[in-house]
Image 1 (cartoon, rainbow, N blue to C red):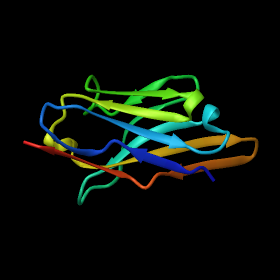
Image 2 (cartoon, rainbow, N blue to C red):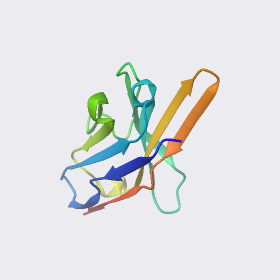
Image 3 (cartoon, one colour):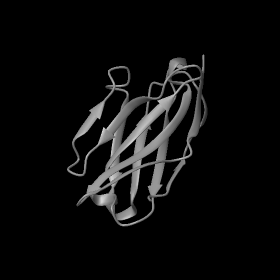
Image 4 (tube, one colour):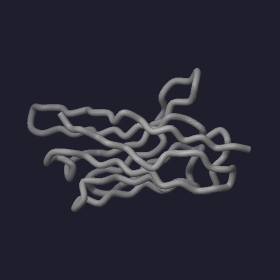
Amino acid sequence: QVQLVESGGGLVQAGGSLRLSCQASGTIFRISTMGWYRQARGNERELVANITSGDSTNYAPSVKGRFTISRDNAKNTVYLQMTSLKPEDTAVYYCNSNARLGAAMFNDWGQGTQVTVSS
């Protein structure tokens, strides 16, 4: 099991920026697809962005051009740089790690960090 610890959430005004970080334990970070998901109150959890072990990225249409996901394999850390934040970005943001190692599948979640964007 991979332990994921998120940080960087908080309260920001609309138009502002935040950077989320997620540090992973263990030795499979390099082969993992890392993702950021979010869940607003009353809504289902949704994918925000992910990045593969080969650094391919994928973004939800609602954040494309405003958010950037990146990873630092030396630090076992994935980042989500969020700019031009909107009130509708308010949610709990979760880090996810997904990997396959031989026949074993790994899918782990962080505890979540709250992002609140005021209008």
